[in-house]
Amino acid sequence: MIRRMTKLPVYVAGALVAASFIAARPVGADQKIQMKDLPSVVRDAVERETKGATVKGLAKEVEGGKTFYEAETEINGHARDLLFDATGHLIEVEEQIAIDSAPAAVTTALAARGKILRLESVTKGTRVTYEGVVEKNGKKIEVAVDADGRPLKK
Image 1 (cartoon, rainbow, N blue to C red):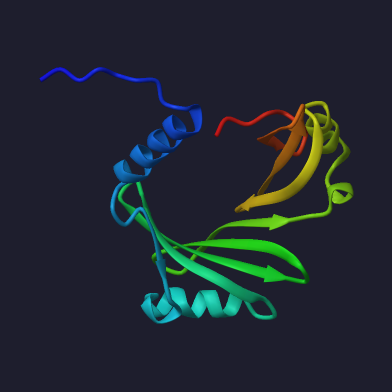
Image 2 (tube, rainbow, N blue to C red):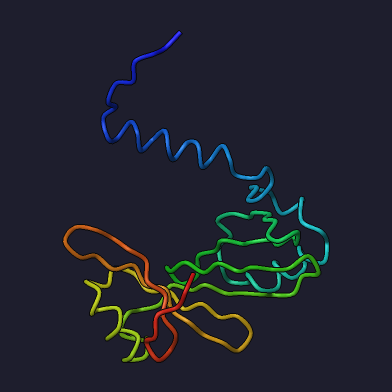
């Protein structure tokens, strides 16, 4: 039996595409968990690194066959996300920062793309980069740059 294809409204087609990506996502790639579900070494690290913060959520992620744990927190009114490996080592910190606290090269590079709505510093080891959400002509995009304002590949 041959079915005739009809045009779907754009929002319906978009929802179907989004649903197919969600359905195709590997099971366990980003799984919400509770503190009691963390390995003890990771739980100890999370408790140590989140003192004075509110833990908003925890997740277990598997990337490239390696397991990571993310703690989404809020501290002093701004978001701060911490990524730990399975041994409890802190791998990455993403922290919302005031736009005027970033290096001038960062704000200049982001402002060239549009109005800066939100800015985060991303620290991996000793390397600090920046991720900004900018808006231009009603469209929001995320832009990642290094401390010198050079674009990064995601």
